[in-house]
Amino acid sequence: QVRLVESGGGLVQAGGSLRLSCVASEITFSSLVMGWFRQAPGKEREFVAAIRWNSGSTSYADSVSGRFTISRDYAKNSVDLLMNSLKPEDTAVYYCAAAVGYPGIPTRSSEYNYWGQGTQVTVSS
Image 1 (cartoon, rainbow, N blue to C red):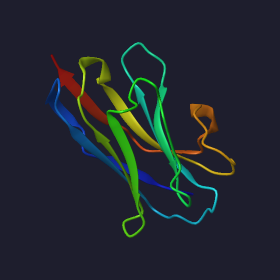
Image 2: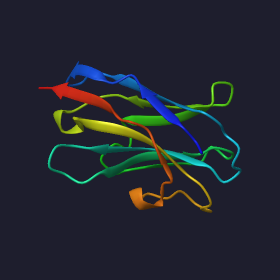
Image 3: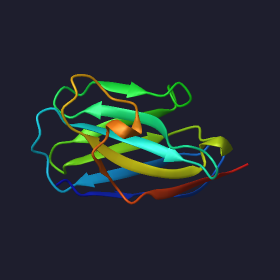
Image 4: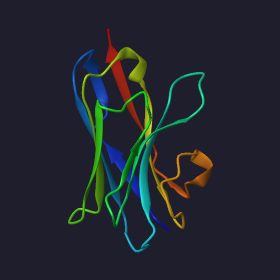
């Protein structure tokens, strides 16, 4: 069982930046992928970004590519999501998730085994 705890959400003006952090209770799976998803009111949960823990390979949704950066910290067992040039349409609850057993980087929420409780990000115009 992997427990994920997110932090760092909040309210920011358009064009601003936020950093989300996700701490995992343990990192013992060699095939672990850590990802971020988001869900806006009335919309389905969507993939944002993910990183393979061992290799550092990353994947981004087109809507955030070039603005968001995902990174990992071995010492802290954590994954950060740096969000720059935020837009009102980035407003959502952001969830940290972990997937085990995939050779690549899964992008569907159904492929992730563990989830955090979510953190609210609100971007004002």
